[in-house]
Length: 260
Image 1 (cartoon, helix red, strand yellow):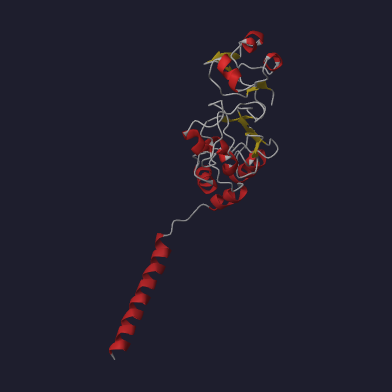
Image 2: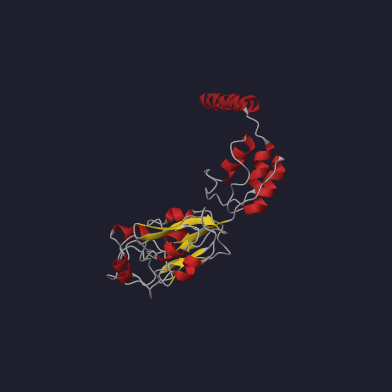
């Protein structure tokens, strides 16, 4: 009898608990706007965070609540912006296509090495020791950015990371993963880029790499719109002033400025 009584008590408690859960589910459920699910489906699902939110679901909630505009999804581009705008009944506007740019051209044939590295093969680990490259500002070439890219858009070629423009969505994950901070995310239609990050004086840069910016000022002198400056021995281009005339590209003696 004691066993039967124990079973009965446990079963009764289970039924009471189930009843409480059913009542709670009925009266405490917060109804979700169905557009959140629709917007989430329209997003690419990359969860890259380029929109400024933790993932696609959070971004969808922010759009529906009015906290974010519809055109922030970099991987989705204009097509995604149009789809989300249709769901929300608003104008999509024009989405600016972005692309990652590796500000270094230091391939194996262009940059010297100081020693042969035998440690952990990651850029983050190598950076702790300064790296084997004679240029302490350049790409380490161990592919932390490659591992971070969800779109197979960046690869290490001959010791330096190279972006595939056809696959790159501009999500910025590679830039976050680079311990040197030499990957920039910029509009596809932007001005020419300085593909160097070395801030040493010209003589030192030249000894380390044959395509490094030497701060010679030629680009500054030939720019008709005063868009180029040399700061900390490194050329910088102001995209607001640049007219993409190409004079800096033509006159750079080391080929550190490229028209992408």
